[in-house]
Amino acid sequence: MALDLGETVIQIDAASADLGRSYRRRAEALDSLIAQAGRVSPAEARDKTEAAANRPFLAGRVIDSLLGAFAAPPLPPERRVISVDGSHIDVDRHLPIGCYLVNLGGCVLTYGSRPDATFFNQPRLSTGPQELYLNDPDDPNNEQAVTGLLLGILRAVQELERLADEVEASPPEIPTLALMDGTLVLWGLSGQGYRPFVQQRLLHRRYLPALERLRRMAQTRPLTVAAFVSLPRTTETVTAIRACLCPYDARQCARTCNNRRAGGPPCDAANGFLDREIFQQTLKPGERSPLYRTAPATAREYQGDHSVFYYYLHTGREIARVEIPRWVAESPGHGGNPSPLDLGHSLLVEQCRKGQGYPVAISEAHEQAVITAQDRRLFREMVMETLERQNLPAYTSEKERSKARPWL
Image 1: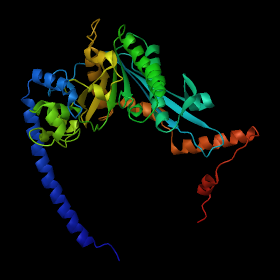
Image 2: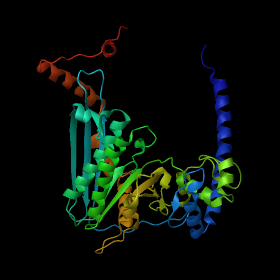
Image 3: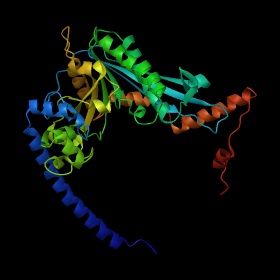
Image 4: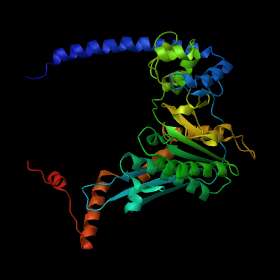
């Protein structure tokens, strides 16, 4: 029997009407929440969010004020944006050789009196146990295979290291934005059950030192660093508002509320909202929100100068989250150059304008790094053909063979 389109249309109309009523109620609730947040003084917001550590939710720490808007500073006449992205081919157990490939791509875009654009990509094949496994230096029998999520984390580490290399190789006198796609925090190392030596190898010996290299370079040149998150689903600022509205002590809060929802008024006014919904209402194109510091419990490994701060930016098309290290948030400008915070804000606005809502440097870096489906197929064929030329066993599993030659 064919689909009853008449009955289906009636149901779609009813669902749309319900959605419309829900949308209007939600818009009214959002306006009310913003109005309540606007009545919180900056000093009260800073005190309450700083004291929120023992509450059952993770609230961003207010630095300036709970809400507000900052216009984009003027662009420096000479400027540069450097971005690096990556993609990879994971270990394939159906291949006769254990290996993975990481392709790093990026661009250096220079604006001003001598505009220029440089693009690069660098594939790197990794084979052998020293690269396919991370070993515990205190126990050689303790190892972790570099595959799946862990390979993605390793790739993010390599992206930041290559970004630091490109900054180091660039002329130091031009104000520069070193731009990453995504978050500054290696979330994959948190809560995944990785043993301490994995975090030590990737985060403490490689990732944080690469951030430190960038910080040291910024002491002698006009340099800023930012990580750009498109369409963020974070709620740290919403929960900061919740912390400011909450009239109860932490013990009662723990009995009635959880990280996602408050159990009752007035805190439940924040339930269900994302940070970006707040700033869609309060920011104009090109403006940024006040600064916030990520709750220490969410990024406890990132301390001191590499504590993670963030703000929201109206790109003209969407609300994006921008994460920066503490030294970017707090360093003053020097030598007539803008502060790292102002430099990053102005260059990101320009990048998003050129990229129609998304930083053009990240788009170009992605184009250099992407591995297409055809690339993956050719890589597999190249591996098999190379083994055959070397008179080495070139085989695959029967499962993989059956996929290539279906019976029907």
